[in-house]
Image (tube, rainbow, N blue to C red; front, top):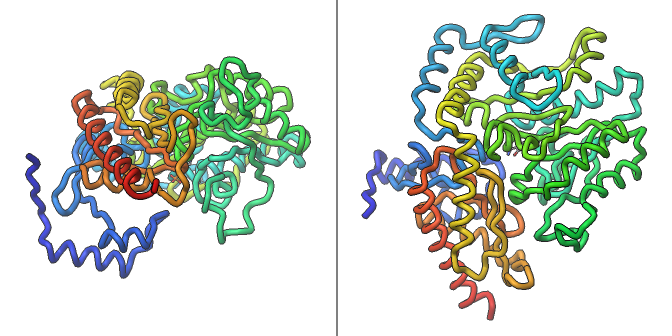
Length: 464
Ligand code: PMP
């Protein structure tokens, strides 16, 4: 029996919903859906892996916010570190030759952690800024080394890199370009690897890594003398929690070396433990030239992002004398304090290892569910996707008009889960890295109920 206690009155809740309709523009939220729900879902509190709505109902947050709340909600250590720093020096610039002790400490920590050679760290306020900064660094590098025509960036289908203009242009998911053209020139897309729905019709084990070859083909199509970088999420997040086959990144690294193309790893979701390694690309022993970071740096306690660049990219900038790029909040002292406190928790509580172990347990438990519409349960560490399909044998997808994963997510909300439908009817399962096995059991039970309800509804209505 769940006891529901709200600290808000019904009138207050209604007023908030009305005010939200009147004054608030939400990012990537369906306005008709919010209207159909009778207002937005208002979350006001949280603890651990759970959050609570203003109505007083608790939910397991299967997304850890937007893939970021690695240490869970309510961590006093981070609150204290941030508040102490806020009292001491809430802000100072990193422009014009200034810095502060914590920015130096965080830069050193990250530089020693990342699998980037002779790394240097540039700070941003989030993932989109990290992406734009990385593309600018890639272009700058070839400009400063006498090859200004080497400025094209290759990305992939199903990529999400954020919504700044460069990041938008690098992204390739439905809807993100509509109405926003012209995009930034010089971004190209090639197919991403996904063995379950292999774009080349191959089977892992007997294939020739056509997915990696596609990167080479794209470089040759554009002309290697024009390509600055290949940018990819080590594990695709928003595009469906898609893990590449093991041989992909080692091959891609070789291809990038062959054509002097920078390998740019968008570790915004993967970075700082979510995949069961400190960084996603480390799962395949590959070293990128540029790495974008955000989310897990602070678990979302306060916004912060970063770019790690190799010494090779830094050297010509040093020679040139100045990097004409930066954000007001670059190296924000409070964010740096939160980052250090957050990463200390990750280390002390072995959360990277926990992500690996609990992720495997979570996938096993979902795989054990006897539901014919679960096609693939994929993932690595705590980036997981449940692929819902109309026909498990043929891997046939639902018609988009069915909105099956969206329906499951809606029922999830009724059943006490914050669930997110990714495109092509995949569900995102990426809870906080602190999740316990008991909490996993509860999550899976509620997930089963929600999928079962949606499937039975589908059989009763849509299939006729
Ligand atoms: N890159 C990736 C891989 C992401 O998942 C995201 C955010 N979901 C971004 C970039 C953009 O980050 P932000 O929303 O902080 O700008």
